Image (cartoon, rainbow, N blue to C red):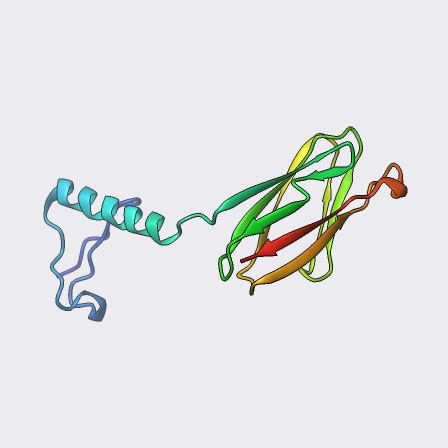
Length: 139
């Protein structure tokens, strides 16, 4: 007897698969939807977002110039350039360099890091003498 092929977009339970041992296929459309929703919810929890911090650049200065983040945690840092000229976030200890166009935001991911102080600096495209410095404090 020939097995019917599932339609495109239809969930298909493979009976006899070694992946399915000990599990029973969902019965009915509502149970399939609940099962799919549970998988999506679980995946969303597993991919919880990193803590987010913002460093603003105004008048070629970092605000705050000293930012404290938790140790051993991956974090998202949004660099918000509010100046009318491009700026750069540069840190050799963090191995990060990010060009931030005028009046725009860029995101970098850092960590997990050991406790310590990690300096960073800006490189203003308009006037290199106005470049500011800051430090990331990891506790």
